[in-house]
Image (tube, rainbow over all chains, first blue to last red; front, side, top):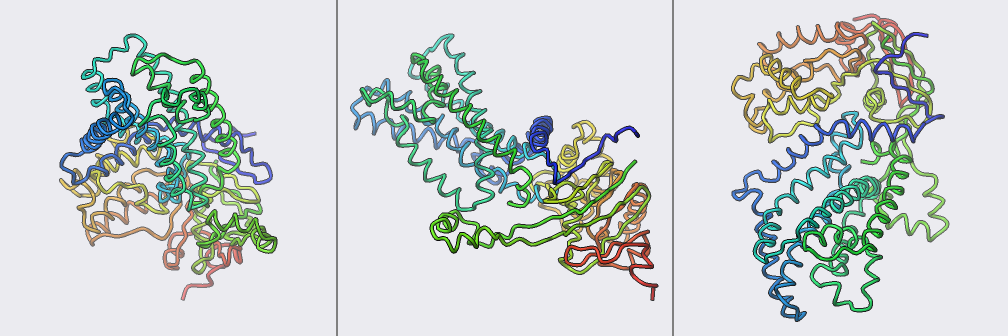
Amino acid sequence: MSATHPHLRVFDASDPRRASRAGADLREGLGKWRLAAALAWGDIKHRYRGSVLGPFWVTLTTAAMVVALGFFYSHILKVDPGTFFPWLAISLILWAMVSQAVTDGAECFTSAESVIRQLSLPFTVHVLRCILRNLLVAAHNLPLIVAVMFLFDISPGIGVLAFIPGFLIFVCNAFWAAFFLGMICARFRDIPPIISSLMQLCFFITPIIWMPEQLGDNAHWLLFNPFNAIMETMRAPLLGRPLEVGVWFAAIGFTVLLWIVAQAFFTRFRGRIAFWV
Amino acid sequence: MPSIKAEALTIEFPLYHHNARSLKKRLFEGATRRVKRDAESRVVVAALAELNFTIGKGERVALVGSNGAGKTTLLRTIAGIYEPVAGRLSVEGEIGSLIDPGAGMNPLLTGRENIVLRGLYRGMSEKDGRALADEVAEFSGLGEFIDLPIRGYSAGMNVRLSFAMATAITPEILLMDEWFLAGDADFMAKAEERLTRLVTGADILVIATHDMAIVRQWCTRAIKLDSGRIIADGPVEEVLGPAD
């Protein structure tokens, strides 16, 4: 037997070994994070081509929305602006990140169509590129978070560290959601508009422009809203709100569920993506 | 040792004409029996049907055949872009693909940044990518333009950049879609010399082309495809007939 070549690639359709191929895709894809980062950076550059304010447009629009909705809704809902304003600001900023991760993640494969059809790359690279791009966009609003905490004198103390696991849960969800939705949207082209209208619905049924306390006895139903669970694990530490164990369990539960479904889906249909896009 | 081996290699393209692709259509198909049966017998195009061949070290193979015969699909399959639906394919050796030399370029990045990006695509480190960029910058002769965004390049400059970039590294298995040579007279001479080195340096060349002069000049073997099947395979003279 001769020594195996470092670049040996065998594909046998009668023995597709899908699980190990999907695993190798993930490993190699994550190993190419530098490529994904360079591509994400290129996407960001593309976005600001010819714009005067560049990245600060994002920050300004969010700020304008927070101020306008803050006055308006604290009046309608008759809540104390001192509590409502920081809640609304942080919620809107987190929601922008979450909904962007979903809608943009849904197009992670279709938007990379030209590359997928020309170069043999792990599909994980396209997902990673999408995640990194969205995190860069989300980072634009960081100054707002700091400003709000400063203006409203919120000092969550050491508890703010709980944001980190919450954020990791979010990243994990964004990663697998992009795989799952990206594949479905590559196959069925009418899914992206459905997703954006669903996200609009979720915006209203998730506590963002209203507070969970206003639900009264019905607040426990919120545990069934994955968006609430994912957002609350990041939001509560930032606002210094008490951490609810139930929310954490819900967030981890939803994450595991999505992970299992998405990885199973990816394992089964990975070989078809190149034909779909 | 570098080799490409295909056994009953089959690729089928599902044909999603604009309606069949939508979810709405799928849902309604579920509702009525008759249409559902149509959905199950999905329209597929057999792009490659049960190909058998072995390409060994030192062979320079031309894929010939009319448009739609499956030449590019076969190249993409060897490159690892499409997974076979049936049969077996084993490829041993590092692949360099000139199927679309401009793929993955970002028009807003400078020439140099694009070269580094290409290096990353190929799995190089950033440091190696920058070394590659120096080499490519020199060969392309773009001068100070190499540090400007490539969207400002003329068509000729673009070709020079992608040529210099694509031919900078000699792979073990070289895949080409059409003989890739362009530029003004000066550059052409330089490019031809470089391409010769690349083609003779690679252990295996697989090229899809319509240009029979290229086939006769460079290739040792020709595989003729028609509707996804091999209809002739052998030495160039045998497949194409004697030169006129």
